[in-house]
Amino acid sequence: MKQWYELLFENYSEKYDRESFVQGTIGECDFIEREINYDKNTRILDIGCGTGRHSIELAKRGYNITGIDLSESQLNRAKEKASAQNLSINFEQQDARKLTFSDEFDLVIMLCEGGFSLMETDEMNWQILRNASNALKSKGKLIFTTLNGLFPLFHSVKEFFASATKEGNATYSNNSFDLMTFRDHHTIQIEDDFGNTKKLECNERYYVPSEITWLLKTLNFKVIDIFGAKLGAFSRNDQLTTEDYEMLVIAEK
View 1 (spheres, rainbow, N blue to C red):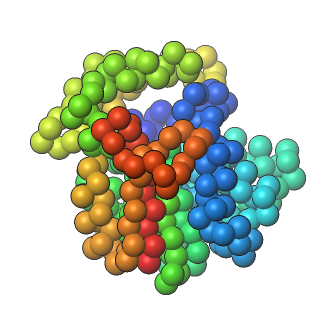
View 2 (view 1 turned 90 degrees about the vertical axis):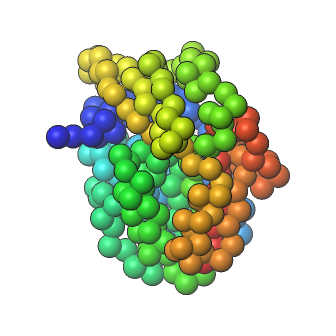
């Protein structure tokens, strides 16, 4: 049986590209470039690349990039967009829990919940982090965003979703946040690219900074920095607060 995140992204690529939460690509890629000192020799792996927005923007800027995703529909859209811009990007349909890359990339990115935090068990989420770590060379860097577990302790996730859906297609309801597991269960409703309405029961894992730090330490990352993630404006100047729905994690081997 397919999981909610597999069903969600079937035939939901053109509409996905119009959602409000994916409009920060340029600023996010500016940040990534600063983090790698604009070194065009950097080999980059984009895990959960979706419709390829970060991969395509970075390829336009001259970087060698591989994008992987579970969704055939999203990858097809990514390939179409890359082809239209005469960009050569290696897009592959792969499961982030089963990656076999080893010591190949200078940078791994997982942005906008690129697989991590969507999985149905903590063990699966850890597998994704482990595989991202394995893909890196000895001095490699991992940059990812994930849901900030401090946010729902101080705010209503339901109210946040309600405010966030004004500009988008996806709507959220029936939120219930479990303090024992730090998982938010909710119903998401979208209209796919063919005009079909989908209603899915989702659950997403929120992480607190100390958990992320510990998980990355077990994977032998030496330097771990965590900041607030501002859409389209990632910065090391944004100290993580309870107001941030997402956190930005930068880890170095």
